[in-house]
Image (tube, rainbow, N blue to C red):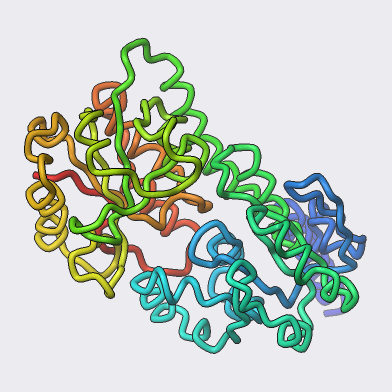
Length: 390
């Protein structure tokens, strides 16, 4: 009996050794490939400005700005899933105010988002410094575009309170800045491996688009892009070749007709569009309920309604019925909130496919956006994000 017990004990020891080895090979408790954040070492983060900041441990309390576009919100959601509502302790009101359909869907999937304290916005001077300090955040993520005002008006007090500032940039629509922003946010949260997955997803697809555009040897289509928040009655903003939609369109081979007349983002005269007579027109859509005639895309719409709204731009504006883009059925819409974000590779694909349909016939931007949602975000995909006028 003793021999039998000893044999069983021996088998148990062998079994435990095998389990230990398997766990180690599969990244279990003995995994040697831990993030620096998980190994007890200080975390050094270099942001898009080149500054290096040091955290003693992964940030557990974070404040964000520009949640509606160009901020850290969606990247954090992709990194942390539903736990993002626990990590963000202060948020600006822009997502709920300007991307209401998205906010409504997001808080339906993650109800805790609605409980996050609102702390105002730097660029409209509603940022509540004292409230932010009282929330005791480890880190605040600041978009590069608001850096000067933030440093002038608010940063000294936050520095004194021991709150680390990390700058990110999605607005320039530069691959390098997207990569650095994803890396910085991932490292700060102790989610380096997940950040690498997201960065690879983005980089692989962007590179394929840009490499294919470089190989195209034909005349660039002339393009007019306008934000559709004002409806057909009033011209919304258009863009320079260095900002948002203008930068996107230029990078994927469009000849932006506003590149020489718009400094950043501003409306043009109606006669300008008639005079330039572009090959392609794009009116961006979102959820702008204050203007019933505004172009609507996103979660809260349907194909028929959006088609009707887009058509009105071509029928209610004087002379637009004679424009080349209209007569050739080259009028499009894309969701206004897609650029300047961690998943805006889908917009690169859509614009490239719009400008060069033959060269990008095998690309499906909507599938790319849905895949990003399914792989990384804790939110349910749905709605209409891209559309061509029928």
